[in-house]
Image 1: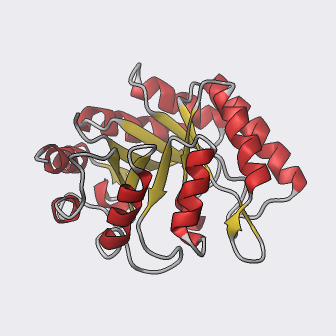
Image 2 (image 1 turned 120 degrees about the horizontal axis):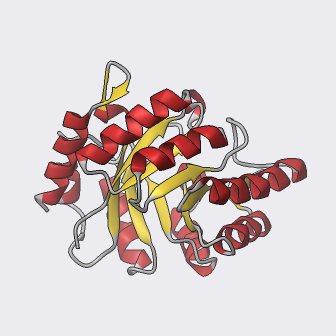
Length: 244
């Protein structure tokens, strides 16, 4: 099975989204993660932007929508949780194939089980896949968090293997990523993200047990040229991944 390549697209406006997703599609991306306001690490995009992404990605499954009502921490109020549930329903209506979520509780940044259960249920009843984003990297014990996420039926986790907020990415976090993959035992897919580029992905993958474990690759800034998703850069990333 080939390793899927996921391209994160900043949801600036419908035209930009359409161009970016079309470029990623042409370059061979298997999935898109559409995020609003990447300056704060991603928020829920406008549904009109998601509809534009759906048109550009055509009938290829793998259009994922970030569900995060604001930047900052990952601890959400009751009002925000209700909004997230509505945003998941809206994303399904707009043509998403999956959602990308995260919910922690303060103090401590441990997983918020009640909120996680609600969001996963909302997504699954609409036949949406569920990815838990890099809020995982903000938790104090990634192994305990992983065990819980598997219990709740999450399909994928996105991680760099390094602490959320640090300057390090997946290249530096490869040892932790390997341990997460081994612990997951194929019960969910590990999405390798954070500083991933066509130039370093080979060195990352060669240190991971990818032959026997579900994995995919996530890239954002490394496939941009002058702020636009580059077909050439996406193709280069896909070719580097395919060689494994």
